[in-house]
Image (cartoon, rainbow, N blue to C red):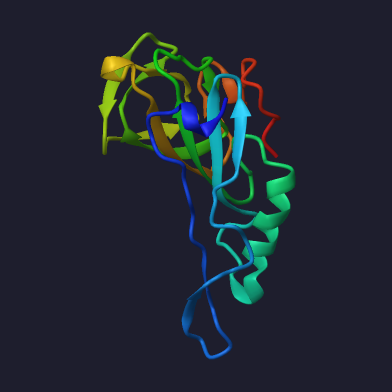
Length: 183
């Protein structure tokens, strides 16, 4: 799936750092074009990752870590760090029902997206709305009017294992999403 088929613009990301005198500057270590990974019918753009939480920024250790991730993207989450990803969904697309092992913040940037839970409950999210996803089983459906693309920003952070009274510990369930398991 190529970026030019979309009715939303290509993405860039700008990483800041410090010069030797502590002044804020833009890092030129990485391209400003956001890397894209096609997963099933959707596009994952890996805006940034960290290996540790809290992050180690000194000496640009986090930039080096993220740079390594670009050649081998993580699963949905990183158990010791964070993932910032933007997902573009074509019109009328629905993701597989899946569960992350993380605390996720999902923000609608473009279009309208329906959040479906395995209980059958659902909510319509519009531009600017936020879903706080707490390791629950869910799916996303692009319901943007006029057959438009949707775009969401996700920030995934580590969480302790989630235990439910009658079910025990809930693990990751990718349900054939086409991404590798989280680490």
